[in-house]
Amino acid sequence: MANDFSKEERVAFEQLLEGFQDSLVLSRNVSVYRTDQTMMERASDVIWRPMPYISESFDGMDQTANFRDYVQLSVPAKIGFSKSVPFVLDAKELRDALQEGRLGDAAKQKLASDINVAIMNVASQQGTLVVRRTGTDYGFDDVASCEAAMNEVGVPSYDRYLALSTRDYNKLARDLANRQNLTSGKTMTAYERAMVGMIASFDTYKLDYAIRLAAATAAGVTINGANQYYVPVATRTDSTGERSNVDNRYQVINVTVTSGTIKVGDCFTIAGVNSVHYITKGDTGQPKTFRVTRIVSGGGGTGAIEISPPIISGQGGSAAEKSYKNVTATPANGAPITFLNTASAYINPFWQKDALELLPGRYAVPSGSGAAVMRASTDQGIEVVMQKFYDINTMKTKFRVDVLFGVVNKQPEMTGILLLDQVDTGGPRSPLF
Image 1 (cartoon, rainbow, N blue to C red):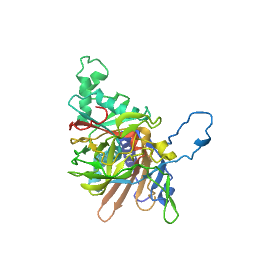
Image 2: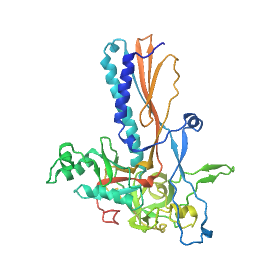
Image 3: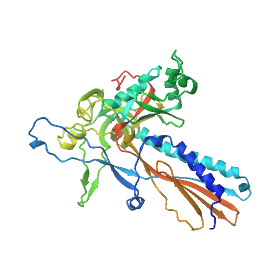
């Protein structure tokens, strides 16, 4: 067959796939949902994934008045990441087989990094459990605060992960390495390898590409208008009579800004609005944390911002509100907003495995069309496609390695971020100080 792969190239591809799979660190710690690729093409690569149900319970024998419809919420998941590494080798360069091997190694490292970075970005930008820490003493308490943030709202206690920037990770390792009993085990490993491992129910990982969140600049921000609560709905009916799904992870609220500008990514609490346990609906005693996901109108003065999660206080009294209630009260008109990201810092995401989902995609590259094609899948279902095409005019051979995938945060309230090195502004304290 024209432009077929040699045995050496096939072996090289197998080694590339092996190295690629070994590099997929974060993708092993999220859920994987495999889709029908024909259906995905017909649906513009979007599928709606269900959020977990939350049930209510009632006292007594007679439950006549308590039979209600359940509301199944869902979120759109899209196969939207298309990553490729192309390179060219001419007939002279191909005399050195190591050239192709080195380029293959570079390709697998970059593509594996692309997948890990996509997962990290989704977790970092959409996590709504915000834990901020001040001071210079780092260690167990920082991670234990993340555990408390999850436990008090009822996030499942298994399959929890925390990914930290190298500098923040090493600060935690220092807490172990500085202990007196440097015996074989956790303390010695922390000292020799700056490795923490599992701590406070989290499997920890070290990132060399963590992103940073700039300090909030807005001041004197208050809620502008009463009764700004959210009512979850599974579907909406358009003016044409058509029904469509609703993404219930976000809400638009009106605010007033005295100075500065609100930006996407800012973290905040609202006076008088505490979080509740998702199952029992009991008050945790901690302010509910929110993230700014979009500026709808005006970053300063009076404007509207999109936040996550929505404020579900149950004020409307519907069954869906009672089931998915996540705060103790609707914010009052004029209620002050306190920003938590008071200093620029690395975003250290933490999550429960079922909250994040990886959606492998597949390219339908035809064989026998002039280019040689090889494909294989990793354990996570990510299909890696390698193609080769020889151009007789230039005596150059084109190679490309491709992956197609998507990442979705099905439940932002089961993911969060840890911000270290924050500055205490003297206002209302954030959770878990």
